[in-house]
Every structure is written in structure tokens, then in C-alpha cells.
Image 1 (cartoon, rainbow, N blue to C red):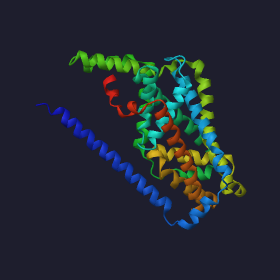
Image 2: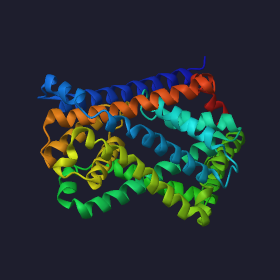
Image 3: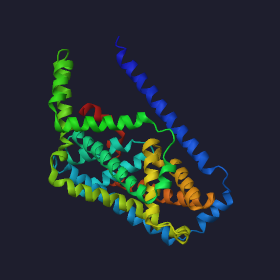
Image 4: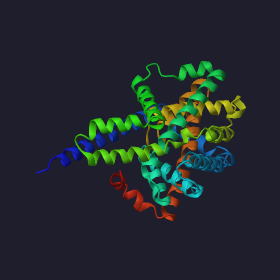
Length: 349
């Protein structure tokens, strides 16, 4: 009787249960601190009295930001897949965001899988481009952090956690180093497979070699320096359009009269981006509300109710937009079979 499969299944179930429990705890804690001491009547008053025009105006800006992300993804894919459909890329991006709003990080698997099936290309290579994309986002976020540090040095210092989790920083550093090794010196991977795996199983070694070959293809953009400038510009534009809705909505709550400008929106973006990277929740629920409320209260003298109203409306608009647009493409492209049968990825691997 083979018990290995059962042991692996039980281990996976325990791991999944732990992750779900951890995510649930983060949501509960962040929502508790976000809504602690809030007058709900006053909160509702600020929400319904906000300027409706400046709540609706950010919607097309949000859509443009996601469209530009699809364009940058096309650039990253250029060395391995010429002529990728921007429409399919955009649909996959929005489906991925919709899934992320339900399952934290779930969209990072669904997005490349849906696109790879639509365009009939390797999932492993496509998934590698998502990892590269996340590395680019972290680098851009760090650049923005450095820029905002020059402008809001005192505020940034106060925002940084007193006890930084070195483990998380180490994991990111290791990921970047491994990615660079795979991209620039693949013989290391081949040597490890031949020395460690092949003596025990030629079949497994061949499968791993095939996976790593496809995976490395996703980092082919690293060997195309002629596309570097394009990717840098597209990355900066993406984050500009991420910050713009935050800034526009300042006017919905009359924050501009308190001297808040675009750089303050950048500060909110950087802080919420870092907090979401450290403590991911579905759609950044709770975490976004908490960090935005803290910043607006602590640094700009905004009341807790008004700060939370701003965070709730901003988050709600973006959340619903991603759900509806992503859901539209799921129905339009009949992608629900791909999403529900995501276990097919294991077979491809």
C-alpha cells in the first residue's frame, strides 16, 4: 500500500490550513486596529458626503494602470513569445487580480496559466516572467521609497518597522540571487541535476531539466539590454498611474485644502505597497485600511473617521473594479474551466 501520496496530501492540507489561518489572523488584527475607536455614524457621514465626481474619476486611471502592466508584460515576453496579444495579457492580468481579491497570491498562478493556455506557450516560462515582474515591482518600490525618503525623511523613518523581519528580506535576496544565477549561468542548474538527481532517476532528471529550461526562458529579457529602457519607463508609468487615483481622491475628501499633494499620494502608495508585500491579504483587505488611516492621522492631522472613509472608498472602488472586470473576462473567455482545473499545471510541470 502506497502511503507517500497520503502523507504528501496531509502535509499540503496542513500547510494550506496554516496559511489560511495566518491570513485570517492578519485580516482580523488589521481590521480591528483600522476600526478601533471609530464613530461609525461619522464614518458613514464622510463616505456619503464625499465628492462623487472625484470618486468616479480614478476608475479609468486604474484601468489604464492595469493596461500598461499588460503592455510591460508583453515587453518581458518579447524574447520568448513574439506578437503576444495585449488584449489577452490584459484579460489575464484582470483575472489574476480578481483571484487575488479572493485568495492571496492565488492570481500569481492563475494569471500566467490562463495566458499560457490562451496563447499555447509554456506555463513554466510564463510563470518565470511573473517572478521577474514581481522583482521589477520591488525594485521600483524601493526606488520610490528612496525618492520619497528625500522628500518625507522624517515620515518614512517613523513608518519603518522597529523590528524588521530579516527573514523576509533574506528570502527576497535569495530569490533575486537564484533568479540571476538561473538567467546568467544555467550550467549550475544542469550540474546540480546531473550530480544529485540523475544518479537516482534519469526520468526525473530529464523532467527537471525540461522545467528549468522552460523556466529560464522566462528570464530571457535579462539578456536583452536593448529592452531595458522600455521596461524601466513602463515600470515607472505603472506606478505613476497607481499613485494618481490616490491623489485624485484627495479632492473627494477635501484633503487638498490641507496642503496634501501628489508626493503625499506617493507616500501612501509606498507605505501600502510595503505593508501588502510583508502581510498579504485577499485584495489587501484590512492592511490597506490600517496603514492609510495611520498615515493620514499621524502625519496630516486627519480624523480617524475621515481617514478610514478615504481608505474604504479608495479600496472599495479598486476592489470592485478588479472583481467586475476580471469576472467579465472569466465569462467572456470562458476561463472558469482553466481556473477550476488549475491542478493541470502539475501535469505540465
